[in-house]
Image 1 (tube, rainbow, N blue to C red):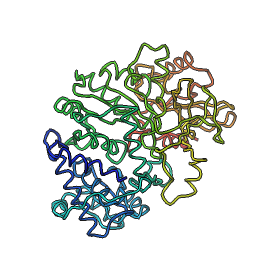
Image 2: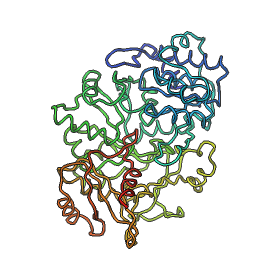
Image 3: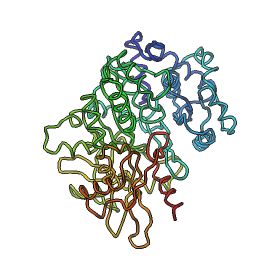
Image 4: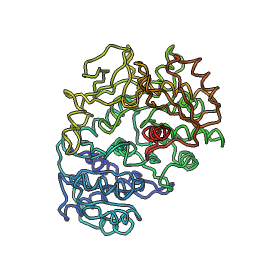
Length: 500
């Protein structure tokens, strides 16, 4: 089934239902949303772009983004979402690798692609959309559940990104599991797009389209705390995707300005580690609006979920352990912890998180070698290390590549980071391993804040085994992050290389 049928059906039933807002201004109802998407499909079809072809979106968060995305799906093509913060040369590489025939770009960004000699035709949405929307519409084209829908390029911190093939079946499975395992969506809800639509926030439009909910685009085009609080008050019943760093920032600003989060219904945090101290503080201030979803590009938003109840509950004897977890397996997948060969491990044992099911990718785009390393007998080897308790809650510790081995003992950086963040004068922390001639590696902590190293050392001695404590503490003004807010530990390791 073509995932875009959800928009077509909603337009048939409720064409006058409000669909898209730019700030507080209504710009599309479901009837016009559908009509414009169908016109985009007709325009693409007239240019010879149809089932099996790729259409790239190098765009900021604007209403046209969703219209073009559904238009490409209506035409039977697959969408290649490209982070708007990438350099033109990086985007051009993705366009070339994916074999994209046509790219829609935001004003100013089209020129970057042309300067980088990007392949295929480039459409500047600032000047070309009125003509496109006047084209003869076509309905959604039939697609198989296993046909490509989204070609998502990983944000890898080393080497070239890999194209994850995401099918219509995967997107349908993800969206329906979200409603069952995380948070039901109603027509009265509104999705607020403050995080890049090229990433997790972008596919969360699906369940909101299916329900006929509203879609709100901040005029700033991105993440601005004051703007988010104002739009939440105006629209009410706001749902938003937020990286853990965004949640932390929202909490800090809200506490400083007296904002309560009025109008926020659901804040889904994902895309990186949420530290226990940060989510406890956020819940204490905003109340029961948070839930967590764990996934990765290879299984988009579809591995585990931690419900609103689990995030808020303080009565369970192990509530802290559950809150520090990423939740339990979603309905359409199996999740287990495996050893290096993929053999299942019993509850409580540490190993690699593995997942199998309808939300898992069939493989990487034109990269059979990487596919073979990542898919083992149908199981996706996530590269994330953790353990599962007897109740099925999965606690993710770190990426396998980030684990530190010192004196033959495994040290999980997140465990040390959690302790460092207990200090009131530490706002961010990241722990990496530094090569050591005797021990193999030694632990080094980078942190943002005013805490003194001796205070942090004592904190670690009081809370974790001595061998896990950092041997060096380095205070920095900021931690290096990628476009999705993830700390770049590779950059921290480079800083240590310069010390040698």
